[in-house]
Image (cartoon, rainbow, N blue to C red):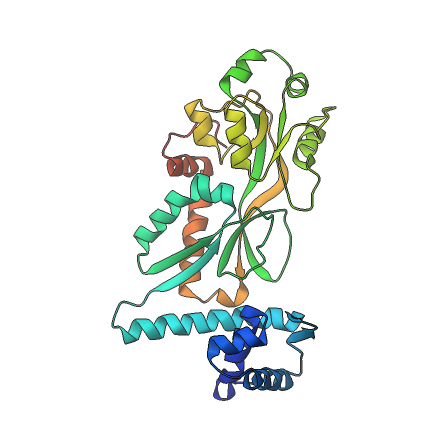
Length: 318
């Protein structure tokens, strides 16, 4: 068994450099060593583990399954060591950078004031936030990720923050122009605004809504956007109808900038989940953020979402 007395630190540092750059040449330059020395260290680590970490291909290399499992752990460990050693060396308070991923709509519409609140409560925890339009986990490794996805099981700890419940929303003038129409007629007479989901048909969310409501609706027509915020902004301009989560857009509905003409709403099968590696359960920084954000999503979610946006919550925010 490998224990800390025999950790191959030089070999791990070599693998970290190669894995980050996916290049022996670039990895050697980053560490200031020869390419042959770097290669020997990586080969020695592979022999020690009895598993190939890198797949050598013509003109490029790729991580194997074992390499993909090891690299983020090595990177995270070296990052933590680097941060703490530099902090101690310079005599400052020990701080830690927490790398968090959030979908753009959640980040831009709700999370920025919440992250500001978290920083005020935990000033020694620095935060690096990344975002993308992808559904599910990002391709790069982070400490924690809030993802928009269907329920699924993987090797990470997963906390459900909330399940999305959507309803058609539009500008007030659109609701007035079509007042009195039943839901099916209202949707048929207006442009449908879609949110693109990677690997899914463009009309997936509208088709799911129509199916649950028993509507015969052409769900492929209309405009498609990368984010729900963009779709809702377009709807707010008076140019179509979007499907939006009542809780996320509670403040917009309360202000009257956005209207939900019908009481009909349904879960679309997607939710927002907090995910992180099981080995980080004992990490006090990860534990602090986990407890803090779960507390924000417990109880009256619509109330704090409206507070985050700086507006009063509507009575029907749930």
